Amino acid sequence: MDETLRQLGGLVLGAVPTVIFMLALYGIYTVLVHRPLVSVLAERQSKTEGAVAKARAAIAYAEARTSDYEQRLREARLAIFRKQEERRQKALQARTAVVAQARTEAQGQIESARAGIAQEKERAQAGLQAEAQNLASEIIQVVLQPAMAAQPRAGGAGE
Image (tube, rainbow, N blue to C red; front, side, top):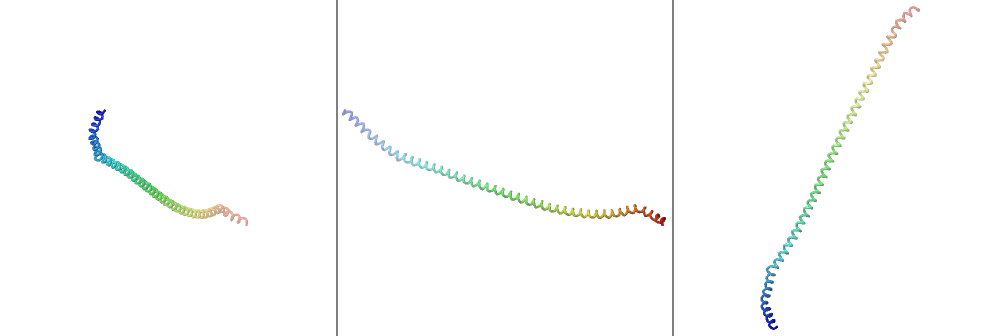
């Protein structure tokens, strides 16, 4: 057993430089590779998150601008519709005024024509009255002329 322990002690003693070498290698790895790698990965993670945050902010900004643009577009359309409605109302008022003026002028012409017709009627009635009197005089002369011509004969024989 002593031999085994001695061999074991020799192996452990031979393994000490390997363990020291391994610990030194681990330390060098940690200092030269692991820490810079961890810091680079952390930086990359922060930059990625920053880029994502920037992208989200840009998307939010673009959505806000789009919303603003759409609002302005709606307002512009509404303003156009209002102007069109105003023009339509003005055109309707102008048309109504023209129609009213035309009606007034037509009513004046109708009244003037009625007055002219009434005057013509009065003249025609006066003319017809005069002609009726003339005709009546002629009829009386025609009817009474033979009777008047016969009456002096009858008066001369009867005296």
